[in-house]
Amino acid sequence: MSETCKICKKELPSRQALNGHVRNTHDMSFVWYRFKYEKHFNECPTCNKKLDFKLVDARFRPGIQNIHCSDKCSLLGKTRGYEYFMLKYDMSKKEALQASADLTRYQFKDASPNQIGYWLNKGFSKKEARQKVSQSQDKLSEKSFIARYGEKEGARLYQEHCRRCSDRTSGKSNPRYGVTLSDKQKSKISETLKASYELHEFKESYVQRYYRGTTFATVSASEQEFSRALKKHGIEFVVQFPLVVDEEFREQDKKNINKIAYVYDFKIATHNVLIEFHGDYIHANPKFFTEDMYINYYGGRLKAKYKWLKDAYKKQYAKSKGYKVVTVWEHMNYDKAARLIKSYLEKLDENAKDQKHKAGKRSC
Image (cartoon, rainbow, N blue to C red):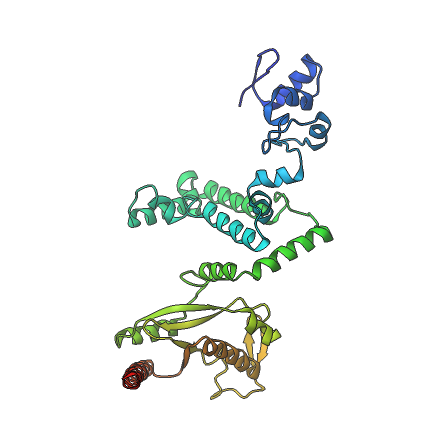
């Protein structure tokens, strides 16, 4: 990218060449040149206050785009982080955290060609958008490299590409590689995270993002088979239904202090009824396990009685929120279980009608 010297109007091939030209021809430092001739180096871009050269000289770094008059203006100029909203709009910390989270979601939503929304916004149909995403992702596959460069060269270039990607994320090319945070920085990050977790709205958005309708909400083959039985009997349901854990429940039992949400396998769409589908092994079915037997649990070992306790807390929380919980075990006959659930829902409807009828009689 060519640069023009603002003193003698000479065209130079790059910023580096301009640096050398200013030093050798005009006998001035590059910092002083930028301070004198570039507006964003002699004026604060946030408040338009004139800058002092000593401040510019002290804050100048190679590649820096602009310099602010104070840390406050620097925060406001970045337009991210809860401090920006607190300073700019005089918000409370709670309001600022929510505003910052909303801004982040807005900035990154449908911003990449690897997202379907990106192509839908450009006027493509849903089918075409999926094809575009597939094509975009396929450009960096091993097959694509081999098709472009031949078998040997393509395989070599693909391996080199993988190595570079790995190096950028966790190797020496990562700008944070080898960086150690001070105790003050760690404390600030910890306080921000704790404050975020106290926001019910933050937890709601977290749950919606990571549980409902995403790959994080995995459904086993047995659950899929059971869901087909429910559909067969005309029972409408929602898969992976989350309930955000409130502060009171967390305080009652310190074991749930870090629990953000409980996710239930199925929720009946027409009733406040939740279905928990329990695998015989992972939930330590009492038919096959005694309380002191162990199960392999997320990379460790857990006694059956403690797994039962975890499941009991989960059911207790749902009941405290007005839901009824039905448990279906993996070894059961799914068609029979679906029939029983349907008859249970019909009984609930009958009871609701009777109560309405009685309430109407009393009012008369």
